[in-house]
Image 1 (cartoon, rainbow, N blue to C red):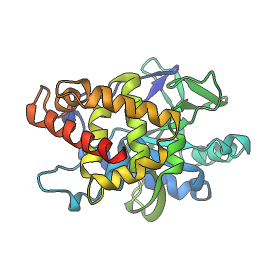
Image 2 (cartoon, rainbow, N blue to C red):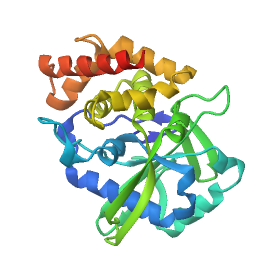
Image 3 (cartoon, one colour):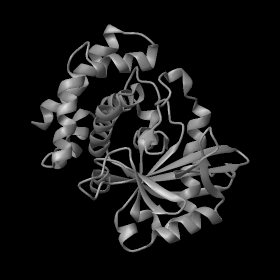
Image 4 (cartoon, rainbow, N blue to C red):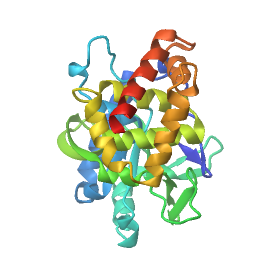
Length: 289
């Protein structure tokens, strides 16, 4: 998910050309740094958003003709509701501050309590914090205030990222240039499909359509691996909404899903890409029935 100001989610860049491998590496290095600082809290956190495909999919094992994922501009971290119930969010925010994180600011200089930033020798990266809905009045994209200077974006479907999650080993340099190895919880493929479909319903962004398609096309040994993770979630109302979005927006060759994947990749419609999107999403849905 991209950054959010005053509860209104800001748009992501709409073209693949606006993303860089260097920025993606910085986000990965920030994720590793966060894991070194929040070690005993990591079971209550899960990586979601645009970093997920590159953590779940080994670029050296991609199918023939597939390109590496374009990456992401920032790090998205989901919080378990238990962190609030048990008051452990105070430990989280204290650790973040001690690690050099501060609330980010809008272009107008106002603090963004749900998005924190760290400035390091290798670069500057922001971290968005997300939380599942827990009240009937909760609306996706709005903020849940947690502390005076700390909030989280209410994210429909985020609970699935704690039900379907994978432990991933990150080995490399932190954003401060330290060598480190840590394991982090990462949103699983089924939960990722649900989250991205719901996000697409809410804001219709090109990047969400691309992320969803990329993971379905390239995860594991084949589409059955994605469907196997998705099927156990389908009894839930939010997951059913996600499936409805896939049916309505991704199965029509000229529908918003396929068209926006093509627009993200090429800046224009493309019959081959759009047919590929429809084909992969349809095969996944057929396997879930």
